[in-house]
Image (tube, rainbow, N blue to C red; front, side, top):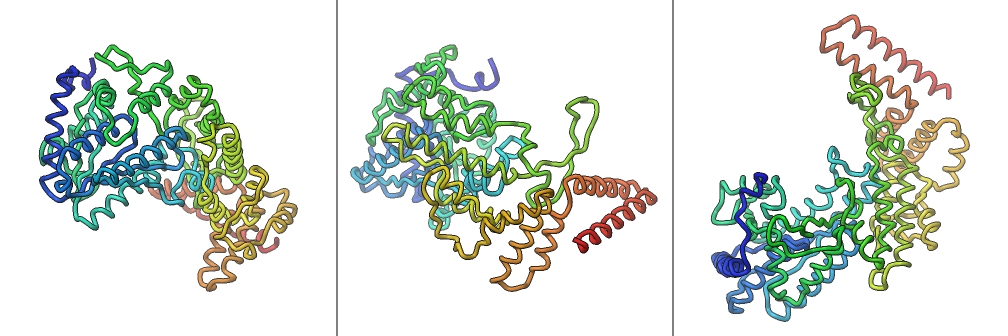
Length: 521
């Protein structure tokens, strides 16, 4: 038995759970009536958050209408890459909740949040070229989940000055979760009510922090959903996402449960496998249309993707790091940190996602066929990044879109007459057919000049200089210079004056030779 199991109370019987719920209902009512601070319920519409929402709704519904004096904001985040089955469930649940709140004069106000377009998964991966997320570079969570939530909470704080955030966190979820909850107990205002360590003037209320998974399911199955939702459908959703298609109500720790099923982004590469989607496809032939999504996710989940990425960082500079040699772990090698996906692979992922979208819109059930894997706003942002930041003025996105989707791409944000166009790109490709870096440099120089044609000339020379700094050298030359700079810095830190002189002279000679070559060309 691990530390987590020993720290939790033993499982309650149904009678004990009913008694505990009655006490918890009184606690919720007392907290709700004690002040005018609005509540924000963070909900994913999974089992835990559905439980807290049902507990709070039931407690407030038992109060007279005139005592339901303050708002309860129900906040859900859609990352735009959620499992489509779950995304449809969430959208439907929000609509049902909103209708019931209006009908029953309940102070619940649902809000479906999204990341900013520039922070969306595909804008970052296809547009900027960010590699698929890893634990060492987990760029997705902050942009797609935390920022929208924090922005919403800050908006509430600006109006009311303070707020209480209700979360369905439980100690039995993991040892890490238990440790966090234990740490937050230090500054508690009252039972289950703690200061928010991330946002001032907000408190976190965790009513089911000591519940076990079996108690969550027992509550959802034994207590009717009060706003007209269907807890049995939620149970079925979890069961379908479990490998053995079983989801019993557990009565002790030896009984298997579907409580470990995890729903999240279908593109997630932070887990070894998307077990929930795999189980859905395995358990239900009506969900086989999800297979193209699983294929894309598995294709993204390649740990050694250096061949798909630039040898420079996203800002055009070569940076080095030390690692153990794959051939001999006793040897340390110094290699470039891989940068963003190259143009070829960014366009590849665009084709793959558009093709999958076209396929599921044909093969999915009728109520799922309007699903979009990538929005028009995201496509517009990707196009803007490729044109304005990557200087890829061949403007390949509309062409790829029409080839895959069979219809023209409409984008009102970019004026076609301002583009140099694909013909000019083809000419450059022909001229620079033997030198990819020369093509990149020429494209950047031409497009930088074009962008400044309608602007002030201020900054044009600095931007042109950046083009030369990032794109005027071959891969081998750029990496060699990075090694020399590293050696120079190391020699300087060691006080090796002679070596500093040699390296400095070598770099000056290389720069002079490079400038001569450029002027001649």
